[in-house]
Image 1 (cartoon, helix red, strand yellow):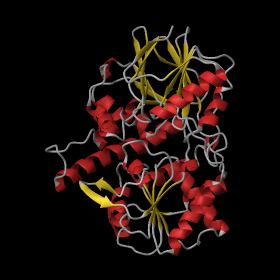
Image 2 (tube, rainbow, N blue to C red):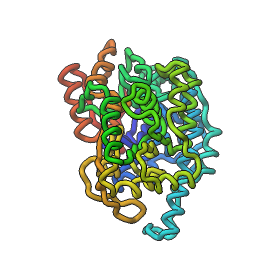
Image 3 (spheres, helix red, strand yellow):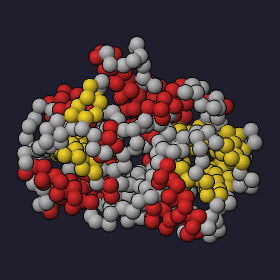
Length: 453
């Protein structure tokens, strides 16, 4: 076997790993690059392997940095099966067409207002492209070993990160390679903990928070405090949020904060993402993936008013009373939240609250870093609102939690590849694993190929 790293090297986006076993070629994850322009340009470049030559895709979870390239892969000739967990398939049915719709919408907006360098601006793929790719999905149950292609078998175990998130293990009868995907947290308020893996010859592990330790303080307390302080000065709270995972924990916390009296029970809370609303409803169907009971699921689903139409979304920007708006995307790279930022970021009474990791090169990272203005739709918008980041709302394991997960291996892998992290985070985790566990570790380069002997 051999592995080539087609993404998630030096960055937390673009996860793609090409595993070859003789003539068989399997792509593990198929994500979009986000953030810096030089990374985003990779989405438009040809892969080093023809999509038609790939036999199958094994997908760890539905977030777009792991799944968002699939419509383009199919558009460019892939005709194999896409294996994933059952909940991941349901989420991709929601996320991928929405991604195509947003890409079309952004291209149309750029053409209408003339701020694109391309004439005309074109979407990377369309909603129709995304709808067409769904027929290639083949959902599989957790802990069920299945044949992927050729001599390669695979199995999924729960990763805890979001609904359906999986740790994927591949083997060809001789060599076992495990992919952590995005690991969840052992004591997450919403999601069940990640499953343990006891053996693999090779391991690919994420390192998003490999150099950090999550604050043990209850993030709900800081969330409630930030909201109440903003309300007291007559302001509005804008929360850029991923529609899958982050939006749901925020809704659950809104319910608990109102129930406890930490924020007013009549404070308007809006979920400006019909997609996130659809995702939230799935929590009732996949109870084994999370910790909530039926009553808590219902409370989460009713914690906010759903904003469906574009007209309703625009109307929010005309309001001036205190309220909370949760809207995609989580790093402010696109979606409806951009229009809210244009409307509310210039007002110092307001708060922009980021509830998770912000990849380098994104608007979110710029705002958290103290930028006094960010470029949205071709124009610079001043950032006078308070900017707050609550990092321990993250659904990613921190350095300690990753090390604890690794401790369950009965024998050291022959080599561990550290991916899906900014360079400092990946290297910090490498050093820690080498020093504490004495494992052989590598932080691979983009497009590097390694023989798995």
